[in-house]
Image 1 (cartoon, rainbow, N blue to C red):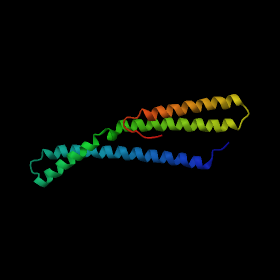
Image 2: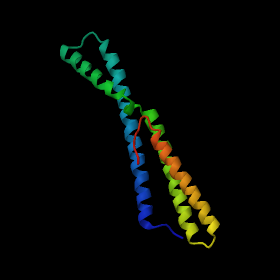
Image 3: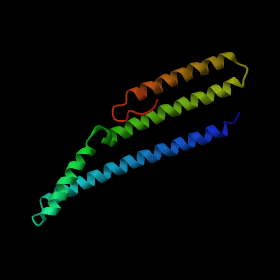
Image 4: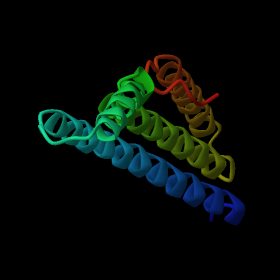
Length: 137
């Protein structure tokens, strides 16, 4: 049995958004890291004007934001990838149940329902355990 075209589109869109979100977070973290190194190097430069030093001070204050838990991209990325994998398992369990319902084996349907319940619970646990990315239902 083929999947509902709307479900396929939603899954593709979810995958695209997840990839774009992760890429954006990683890019932002890399930019903050580069900015931090540049500020550290420039602070030691003897020929900076007062205006340049003020800019470095402001950038240093802004970089503190990058050190907050939400900006801890390696951990955030890990949490998002873990959630994505749990979501994929949930979708696979839903698909298996959908296929099982078209058959005539009630035991297989029951087994798929159990797998779906386990996948839902795992997803809920993953989301509830987020420290850096408290997202999801």
